[in-house]
Image (cartoon, rainbow, N blue to C red; front, top):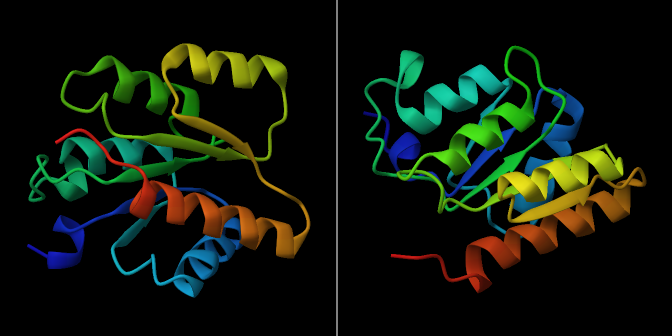
Length: 148
């Protein structure tokens, strides 16, 4: 088993390659991307989280410290991914941060209703985007204390 897959701190669920690269760059700037896995759709995210499909050899007990989740995803949308994570006793305590271009009040309300830990609208301006992602990485990986 690939050690980097077992020691994941951040699961980035993002279908847009540019947004994923910007997110990873911001995290690398603060040395927070060493244990990051990027998946490109909701179906792959669920395979990773539940150690099925391409990730069947992964130990499902090694959960990410945080999941950065886009809402507009192919195959399985982000709301459904969030719904499944938060409805399952084994995964509901994994912090999920929605990082999306949506600013729709209905998306925000639904995400919090499903148990999201944070909802962040992606800033359009490059420097603001880098700052927001850096700060959220620092908070969820270094400041936040998850349940043991």
